[in-house]
Image 1 (cartoon, rainbow, N blue to C red):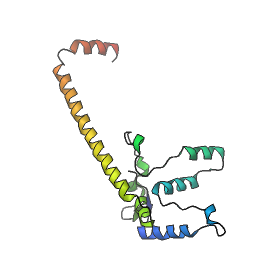
Image 2 (tube, rainbow, N blue to C red):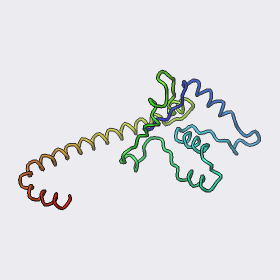
Image 3 (tube, rainbow, N blue to C red):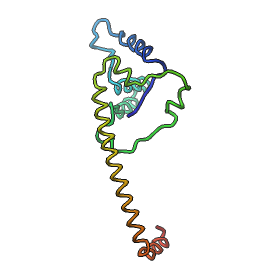
Image 4 (cartoon, rainbow, N blue to C red):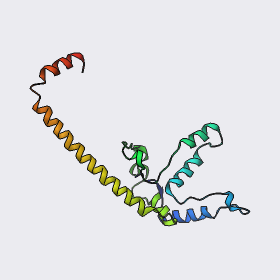
Length: 164
């Protein structure tokens, strides 16, 4: 699960978000601005503020952007990438207060934190089971390669001469 964070305490960030939620159109609030409670939509709106969405290039970039709460089905099997420059331990001085965006969303009324934690624990259990099976399979393969090492010396020499 991705952890986005704000630098300061949960209480301070709740106050800042409450001030943000007070901003609305006086004649017809249905016209915006819209205040999302989901962490994925908070991130999406933050990124939208960084992109020039009124240009064609910015609109296309925003259309390509997908934010999710948790890790959905096609992405849970893919290798995840860590951006070292974005790690909390590198970006924030030790001892500073910080707020995880999921905690902030839960405190302002997002109702799906428990569901997401349940799905995430299920995904981790399945992933661990898959990894254990993969380790067992690799161990069997290594054992078979060691057993056949004497028989495959000629084949390996020919392959090495061919550049494999």
